[in-house]
Image (cartoon, rainbow, N blue to C red; front, side, top):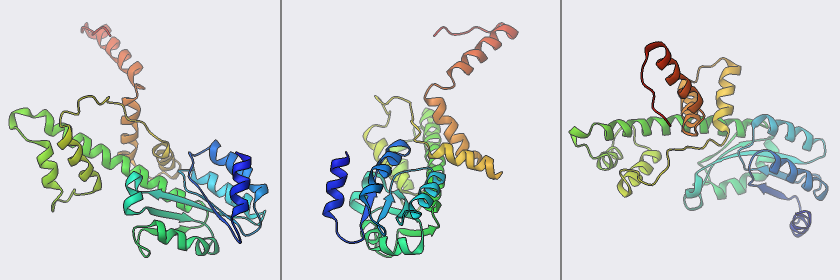
Length: 256
């Protein structure tokens, strides 16, 4: 990896901007350590992954002491961003953002919209963390709503057609609803899909932040807990609940 990074840095002239798109944690940390001896004062490292904002604050301070600039870039848009542009939430010094601005304008949906200097180092990844927490809650609400629609079978509501109808003029219209409409149109019963939802970390950090600040975030927290439950992490508790019910009330239990 060192040879590849060295070759890349050698090909770039002037004050260089290097954008990292790596999983949070060790991959980012190790790559930055590899880059430091290859860079010169004035170069900029942009962390475009979903790093924890406190790590970004620490990295920015350490790099600034070596004359290097650091931008924490929260990036939203998913795989569709390649075609439609990405939403960028940037943290860093005004000078570092000024240098990176031409790149941000090229990546955003429009040069003047869809990217923001959110504040000092850490602000970009903090904004992205909260963004993803909100995303958890919105996804959970849509999923629960369509589950209710599908469960009341005697009313013969077509969830796919209703989702498509809601896309036009309803208060809940959104890109996530657009995705739901397409999913339900293709596979209304959702057959062949395991009911397991992963969590990538930002929801956990958002919930912890709400506790630390004393700011209630029950929707985001419950959406996170639902994901944990889907991963089987509530199975032990549910088994114990079934046994308690059997012991105090003589209720039958199902064998797994």
